[in-house]
Image 1 (cartoon, rainbow, N blue to C red):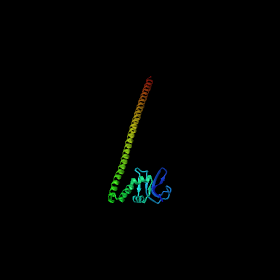
Image 2: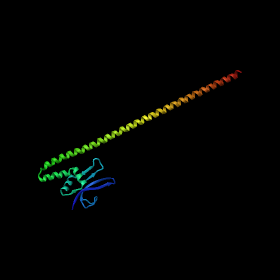
Image 3: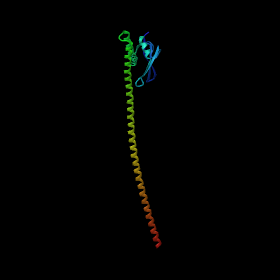
Image 4: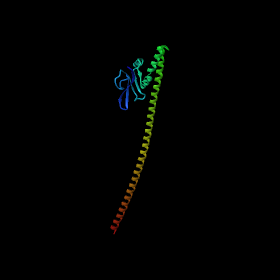
Length: 193
């Protein structure tokens, strides 16, 4: 029975995540499988990979063939590197302690690369957030200036209207006082006659 390590699709449309499974190569993609050894979620940045390292290494040792995507995931997690080092131990190229030392060195470099990518992504998102806040502050200050200018214009118009009304009121009071003076003068003339 040819055994494959492959991905089984799950999740909704356009938002898939995958189970990493060991299955008969004749079984359907999302069908029956022998064992689930992990999961892969490409929707996060960087992609989230959970893998049972020992089970994956055991199945590779038994002759299971990974698909291209599964091979990339196993390589990323270091399973293929560990298998390669164990084959070197079997051939007598070096001892198991040396293999473990080389593997730990490789994993430290890999983790440093992953952490650097995470740090870069977080710093980029922080810079983007700061840029958005600066842009928003700029837009808010422009709006405040425009509003202040509009309020100043409205206040100037209101002052002009008040001055016009007060001038009209003064003119009206002057006219009334003239009329009153004229009528008083006319009434005095009539009295004096």
